[in-house]
Length: 247
Length: 228
Image (cartoon, rainbow over all chains, first blue to last red; front, top):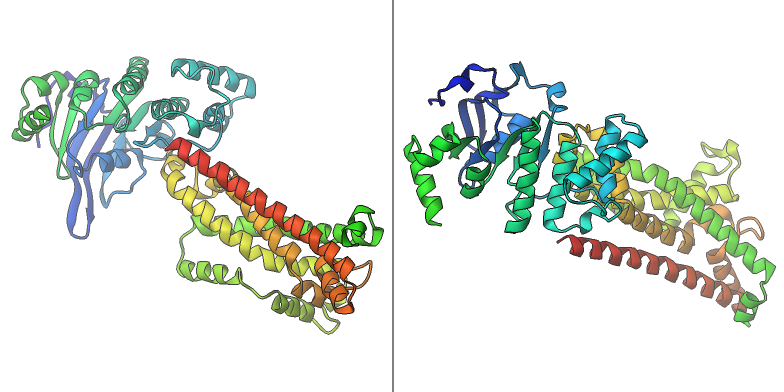
């Protein structure tokens, strides 16, 4: 497999995977000889259902132990200290059965921050996510879009260097999707490296700096977003875009 | 006449009610301290024979109280292994028997609650850097409504139970005489007024506990619906 060329390839990759393999009952779910995520991102991972997008994300976040292969972050093997510098947002937001503020406080308290600073931080985060005034509301009574925004804010409260998002807007309406995308873009602009799985080609076009196209557990193409959407290098890329655009 | 006893605040009657509440509440509190950690640990751990332990725990929920009473009696009787403690025919013996009856109920219900919640939380909590052990308090706290139901179910079982406490308590007046044992005794003596008065209070308590349990259930359903 050929990775895309360019000056960014010369820099240390933020994340890289090598010979990553996951198989179940004789079939290959994931088989990635090499993938390096360089540059500022966001990296958008596209592909049909069952292509292995979420598996790849979970391997990079250390949630799944692959059958073989290695994951690297900033040139070192992925370990617990790296995990602390990562955060992940899931397709369905998993919110604690507590208030909105308590969901944020949960991760801030784990960082050993004093209550006074935590309070200020919570207020700033809620402001950032457009949830100001809802701090005392039960987190699980939020709307779908608000819940996902809170999940992203909670992930950002960990001060992650890398933020993984697994189809965070797949269940949201256009307005809620827009609010989530704005939040992700602001985080990206502040320097959080975004790696995000999506089905939505439009979303990949709006947010993506580089695109990873996955198919049947393999990386079919990894290109700069502009290049990918103008003229995909691979047949798989052309087929996916044409199919996606017809829909 | 039965209601007259309740209304006039008959000291003998209220002493019995108070002792019942004291014994059963203490028993459930102790059982919760034992059963909740066991249930939570069982929910988040994986080991060979785990399924068997869960089945056993569920089966123990149906322990016949009289048999538990008999076992505790054998342990505490003068020739038993714990005979030196001289606890037989004291409220402490009744508490021990009720703890044994309630622990399986609380542990089994806690296991169910925590396991369901864990299925939802496990990836998120690991993503936030929590170990399996560290996630137990989070799961217990977030399952607090369901666990309160388990606590109340345990209390309902303890307060309404007669077989175990009559064997190990001996139904001694002013010492180990509780509502259920008094009802059994007074009925056989033909003193239906006292039996009925205590029966009414017991039914009232049971009704209150059940109402609380279903109120918690409804509010949980509403929370889930709201979320969906």
